[in-house]
Structure formats: structure tokens, C-alpha cells
Length: 264
Image (cartoon, rainbow, N blue to C red; front, side, top):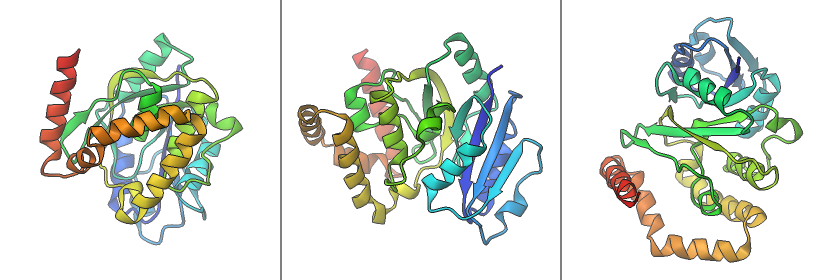
């Protein structure tokens, strides 16, 4: 029977930690645990979380989000790991059951992924059904919609050199170095809040710098030049701003989905 570890890292998250943990505990699938890594919060968030034998808590200093995730992974005992940020939820109570069914039917893929429901646009953001070089350059599946085999972290976990995109580097490392070929589940995994650490204005410059450095490690220079040209021609920066605008995001996502369906 497939087992899961749901990891949530937190620091002064207030009610969001309680809401996320309470939501995870609604899952109908039985074989899972919750690992909470707290960075010595000074608020009352830890006192608010539900009491459950499923929950394992580690509260100690860390150097940031990815260091906290690495520490949490060391506590994990599940076959597969899902990272769920404070404020994010599973899409429904049967997500783990449905994912486990797919893993049992198609085992050994290393990474499974699905879709997310964006709380900004109030629409489902459908992931691509196949990972390619261009997908790796442009937009890999949302971190909360990825299910990772725990064994992938054994040799080398998140690279702490990257403050914004360590999860992105980890995904590309598995794809290019380990030759992992992620499987699309077609399941909506998470209700995604958005507006996270990497989306704040002060981190956008570093985000771009890290993206450029990581892609140069794994993708050929000739392809990078082509992909950047494609992004420029297709007005990607403008489309990104529209997609993140709470007033325009819903309409944009519906048009994008409809266009994609018409191409099939």
C-alpha cells in the first residue's frame, strides 16, 4: 500500500497552518503522515493546529524555506512526498486515494504530477501532459501538484544555493541527470493560494537570475536562445502579469484553456 508524507514548512503562519493541516486530515486515504517543520515561530500558530497521531513536528532554526524542507524530508517515512505550503489545500478529500491508485497501476515513475486550482483566477490551471525541454524552460508543474518518490532526496535534496528556485533546480536535476520521466495524473491535486515567497516584488530579480543560471546548467545554449526568442515573440512577460492580476486572471485562463482545447 502506497504511503505518503505531506510536508508543510512554517514560520509565524498564523491560522494558515491550522487551515492547511486541518484540510489534509480530511483525506479519505489512510496511509499518510504529516511532517511540520517550524522555524521557531513567535506567534501562536503551533498551538492552533489539530492534535493527531499522524502529525510529526520539528521546531528548530533553519536558514530558509528550502533548508526547512530538507530537514522535513529527513523525518519523512512515506514512499512519496508532497509539499503543501501554509494556506494551500488538497483539491478534495480523495486526492491521495486517487494518486495512490495511479501509482499502483503505473509504479516506478519517480515523479507524478497533476493540476492546481488557482485561488486568484478561481479556475483550474491544467499542467502539460508531457514534460519537454521547452516545458522545463518555461513552466514546470506547480510544486504543490508534484508527488516525489522519497528516494530521490537520498543522494541530494534541495540545493541551498538557490533561495527562490531550489525546487525548480531539483525538478530539472531529476529530469536531466537522473532521466526521470514524470507521469501526468490528470488529477487536480491542490487548491493553490498563490502570492508566495518567490512572487514578491523584491524577489523577482533574484528569481530571473536563478532561472537563467539553472537553465544554463541543464539545457543546451542553442535551445535557450530559441526559447527566449519564442517567449519574447509571444509576449510572455505581459501574459504573466495578466495571469497574476486578480481581475483578469479568470478570463485569461478560460481563453488559454479554450485555445489549447481547439488545437487538439
